[in-house]
Amino acid sequence: MLDGIIGHEKIVETLCRQVAGDHLAHAYLFVGPDGIGKSAVARRMLTESDLMVISRPRDEKTGKLKSSISIEQIRELRDRLSLTSLSGERKTAFVEEADWMSIAAANALLKTLEEPRGDTVIILRAETIESVPATVASRCQVLRFYPVPEATIAEALVGRGFDREEATRVARLSGGRPGVAIRLVTDGAYRAERDTATGAFGTIMSSSLPKRLALVADLLPKAEADKATALAKILDAWEEAAREKMLAGDARYVRVLDRLREAREAAEHNVNPQLALEHVVI
Image (cartoon, rainbow, N blue to C red; front, top):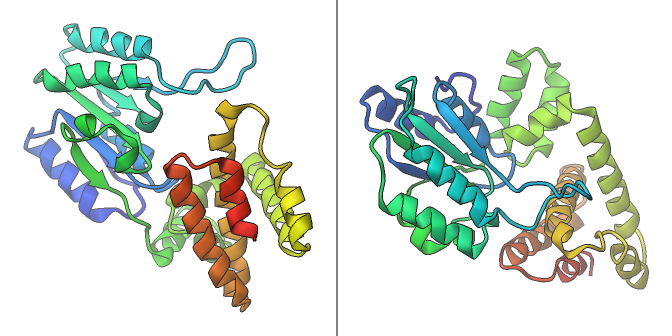
């Protein structure tokens, strides 16, 4: 069921044991950084069930992601889970962005978690446990996903047919996140997007401080609803570039990596995205 997952052996072992013994929890909260493997585990775990996936919808006019998961989406989920499965399969739900639920949506989900049905399983995905209401998190079995060793990621990529040298390089840049590594070697558009961001980072860091701040001011989109997602992508790409510089022997980037981690932590606590980026480059 969970064959092919890169790393996370203890989590895989726990879930396989629960499935084999028919002792699955009613609700799980998978916590860890983007690209770490939470979605891969959730989707493989729920692949043979009647699955409903919840994530932020896109605005019909602009095509952009909306700012939150709505109460209407959670109500639809609750109604579907209350129905009897015609196939007899367990009914399951995967809330991909539990840290993007509106307060009303979180409260509606809480009611479902407080009155669990024996034939349902809900998996929530979030980057940090703090970003999910404590009342929701407390009713879930929390599984924390930690960075996977570079050697494990590299070997997995080689096993999938990728060149060892490229696999080793990508594993080193991935920050211990298998999903990032896979996208770097398979998704040209993603790679191009990252290359653009890392190129901008190089320009910024080689400029004077006033120039750095001026360049950073133009990086984020104007719409407030889009800034958090854009910030996460920028920080990911910058971390990749800074790690490559550090591994090449530039000791200055040890401090830059520290600032990137601080900026990421600040972003998780809803600090202004512009200030988070400025913190990195000053």
